[in-house]
Amino acid sequence: MTTSEKPGGKISAIVRACRLISRMNQANPEVPKSDALYYQMLANYYTRLLNAREEGKFIAAHTVFFPSEILYAMDIVPMHTETTTWMMALFLGEQAEILAAGAELGLAPEICSPHRGLAGAFALGALPRPDVMLWSNLICDNTAKSGELIMELNDCPGFFLDHPFQRSEAEEKYLISELEDMISFLEEKSGQKMDWDKLSEIVAGMDRQMELFREIGELRKAVPSPFHIRGFLQLLTTDYLCPGQPEATEYLQALRDELAEMVRQGKGAVSPERFRLMTLFVPPMYLMGFLEKMSQEYGAVSVVEPLFTRWAEGRLDPSKPLASVAKKASLIPERRSMYGPLGEEALKDITTCAEQYRVDGAVYWAFMGCRHTCATIRLFKDILNEIDVPMLVIDCDIVDPTINPQEEIREKLEQFFELLEDR
Image (cartoon, rainbow, N blue to C red; front, side):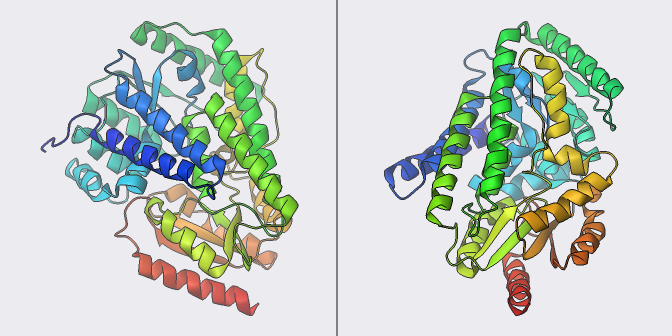
């Protein structure tokens, strides 16, 4: 396999795209302040990664749902692996190249495409080489195995963080001990010590961010709903990339204030609002612009995403920073419904969301590379049918556009909107 790019080539392109969008947003008075803050936050995140090697910084690549709060507290530069693959698809449209490189490594199409693309990008030398690889079993087997491959491709050491499946005092103590071992590993490999005061500050920031996530969720219940469909991805990546960071808090506060003002004025994200949708799983990254246009065209808005944006109740204690980092893992939306036994609590949350957010229909983006979530399709469809909420299932891939062409997706959505219109 040839390595045609210099290290960080894809990151540099993402930074340029984010800076361009940020400048355009700042120059347009009609664009909400939160949008400009979001893209500036993205640009800053990837700029730190791009410049890390030149500045002598230690880089830690990590998979999704990994406690990067610890990395920030140790002045280690994080690289969120799956989100970076998403951004390459969203901003660069070059997913075919990295997916092909992943296929050359022997990764089958059934494997999660963000992980296939990530491996391909590293094999091409298009991403900065990490000093360590950190991964866990949250959320799936793709994540649990991806770390080993990235270690091999980059010839770097790694640490596997084992999350317990159940939630009890014993499991919480076990996870804290795992975090302690990981910190010792990072101190040894990086030569940098944990700054416990800084971690406490970050935990306080993360606690504030969770409250803002919940406030935003409450505002989205309004009729009409003020939240644009693109905001789903923005909320996801805010926590994935910048947990507890001041720039993330600034963005969320600006978004909360904008939504509150829209609700006060009775304004919605679309006008007129015709269809209130529940989104299950993640729509394809490369279709975000298309879905925004469809939203405006048909007056359809996603009002809630139970699997990804609905945080559980609970507070973090800055005086107990490591215990709080462990506790956060049980509060994230994905942990409640996508990891461990799928209990009545998670199922009840689906129907509660449908009722509280006055949902007309649900759209399940059936990502073929995510076997454990696709296994819930029939279950979710049945419980929503019991409360007379129809659900559309769209086969897709998060980053690979060859699975289901845009034209077919448009046709399915149009047919679904016709069904909702006739009800």
